[in-house]
Length: 314
Length: 288
Image 1 (cartoon, each protein chain N blue to C red):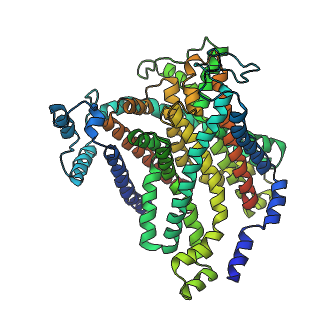
Image 2 (cartoon, rainbow over the protein chains, first blue to last red):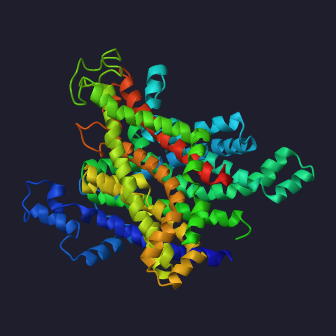
Image 3 (cartoon, each protein chain N blue to C red):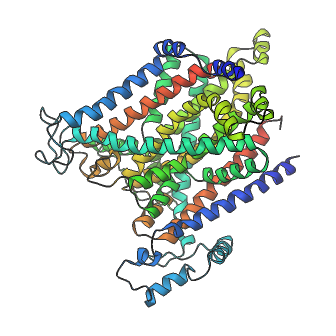
């Protein structure tokens, strides 16, 4: 049963991954005008040695489908090409920057779940009362504040009132793991603001729906403790849609990561991409886009599989 | 035709009921009030203000005072005029992108839902690809490649939000497709495009309107994040994101530089969120 589902799910992945690779591949070809002059500057002659080198390194001298085939063959062999600016391997650059982004996203996800789910259950259990309403306002505020405003305001707040707190510490996962995680806590908390709200709203909505089911009434009639009904009978079922939403939330977090890394000076994928953009390093941009996209696709796959285990009906 | 009217009566409350509900619904009310205040401000303040957004009106970084209620920025420009003026450029991009995605998304979704079969499968696979990327990331990459003019921003973000509308339109179209009045028109030989125009579109507008508020929110957040990263509308036109970005280095001495545009974004987004939540409560009482 599970294996047929897995097989079906994996076949669905192929067109999506193919499409993503086409999008990432096209990025470099969307550049208006001659790519070479965009990359190397206008003063370079179109037939100079350097121009030829750039063309060759991007395979620009070949027809488009051939270029794509060459590129995708390399990508599938885990070769994302060479960075145009510092001539290092794009793959290596990305591998070096992934840990920060993963840690940030992971901690933020944890914070959102730990706060968002109980808050959602609580709001649902007090539907229509002032506490429900105020939580709703809080969640709207959490969604209304852009991640970059929250990050900048957090930095401003700490530097005005707690100047002794070291906000911009060096990250050293290998030697000082706890210190590194500690440094990531504030950025992750800021990043999680909107996802806490999202998770809370999903949980509340799902709980309200579930609590109307006949089996909850049955449990009540049998005299089960209210807390037990809420958590064991209610939340267990209500968690399913929340799990489904977590793929969406992961994409939301990874979008926010770009900004948070920039404000807190953290060397993650977002910062790598932004520096690639400012130095017009198109192969590096291409590489980060396809890697991050693939990450989101894998997260969604994991979410679907988790759903499979949690929901006995499928 | 009579069926259409019945159906639309079921889906959309009449004008009069709509108005009375508007009065009842605190969320819609407060959201609308907030937005009206800010939009009126964005038109009135730059007109009444003695300064233009790009004028240097005083000392650099002077704190809020009677002449400059939100203080001045690094170049001595009036922060209040700039904050309100920025509303226009941000709203232009956000609304432009939203309208583009409504137009494309609705056509995309109704065609997919109405045709079904292979057309549907192909159209939806394409959207899967688009949705697989984190939206801000794809926006950054596209704007970096295309260049950050207002037109490119609208085009990029408009494209980014097509999937949401297309999915909503498709789901509603598919359920309407089976209804008698749509099938009857089909049997009578009404061309598909007219059938969609007269029978489907009027009846899928409610979910699309609700989706619109959340897309405006998403475009506002994306636009401001892009301009914060230096990839939005370029200076000297003020945008909230850029105003915050250029003042991070001096914000401990001049917090108003960050707080004024920050509060402005929050309030506009909050306005649309309240509006959207209110509409959802109203049309989908189950989710209340």
